[in-house]
Image 1 (cartoon, helix red, strand yellow):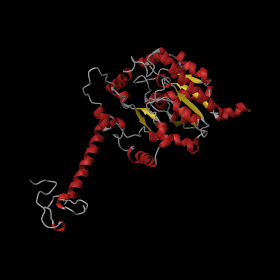
Image 2: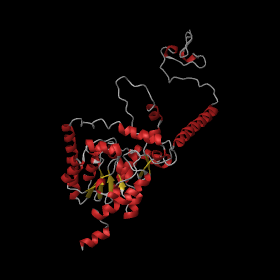
Image 3: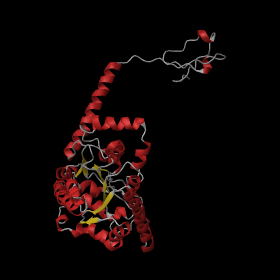
Image 4: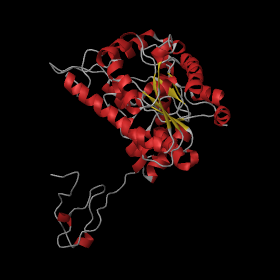
Length: 390
């Protein structure tokens, strides 16, 4: 019987004189006693040019269709909140901007503090190093160990993130230290050639992510858990605003709220008993104390900020991490000043569509109220410092 991969014809004559039928690959059995050459297979004649053009057209149509689908959903082009983008801002300290104001924290500092408004009031545009869903303590420790950083530091405190040590984006610092040349080139090309033009070029719209989020059957006894959906839009220097869909689409807003609510009746990781919870809280506060001591030795001014939350999210924070056991202890042990939104009427009463972050317009208004407080009570402008020192 003939095979599609080898000849079943008996060998006739010497190896050099054997000719296999067209399209049949020569095998060792066809050349007994002869050194094996590189296998050869005939390439059939095909309209390769037409095939290539057709493949290109199909690719363009599929990409255009995917782009159109997400634009209809409400997506617009914007810069990705990637490790590469974060590292680019972190390296500004290495490249001569170590004396600037730096913002760290979780997503509330990222959403709620608007860089253009800060710049308009103070004349300085801060470096935004906040990371969503991530305790600022690793970044605080990193800056404390960096002698090039001599500026001022605003540290955001989202209680469920800060005092639990949770770090959804904990790999950002490793990426900063271990970024390879090829990764750096890839991040540069992505930021300049793709991100400003393609709305679908967002991790939330990746095909694998979309497939994973379908309503697949759940194993008996398993607890389904929805991951956080897209909430933000970001500029080139990581100035971040809430995605407008959360304000205009009630169904999407309800989805975002339901994702937060999944955890409201569950203990925080490694904090399922009062003893464990207190141990974790004490560990996080001690980390802050150690870092602040190092920063003060270099003359760095550290200011903590507790941004607002509302409704059931605020109630959850109050129940699990009350101010008296967390925020107040943090300020007392570090000796650093802090701004808690509950202490300032001008920092209250803002619209928070999904209970945790300010809408884009409200974030501007919040920053316009926050910065004068900072300048008045904690970090006076340069000219005022000069007058006071005379």
